[in-house]
Length: 134
Image (cartoon, rainbow, N blue to C red; front, side):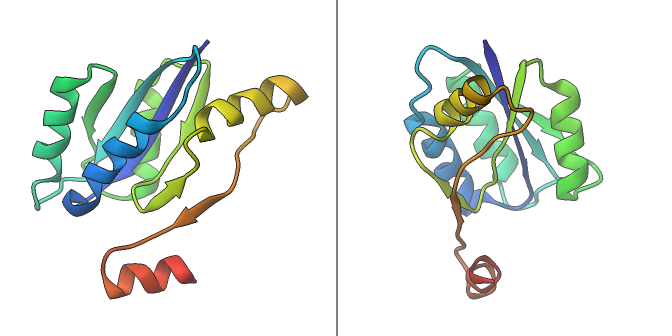
């Protein structure tokens, strides 16, 4: 079974390294996966950083999101994805290291159309932390 992870981002250079690390530590069992990261015309080096990640891991794919917004980025990433299951993940969020595997297991176990688990929003700046806390 193939899983596509979709991630919108814009100007997340400080956080995008953490995104790669979050995906790298995900215990995905025997699941085949890819990640579609939709960059909303970042100006801080995010795109270059993600391109480097993609060079090292062909499962990571970068696409452009000229509309810049998260919803548009998700739609663009979804249009490119080929997984039977699509999992949305965000840059400023912490997930359990088995989030992907457990979400898929919940879908299979219950025959559900949608599943997920707890996650925790986070941020780097004062504003981002305030938004995450809210």
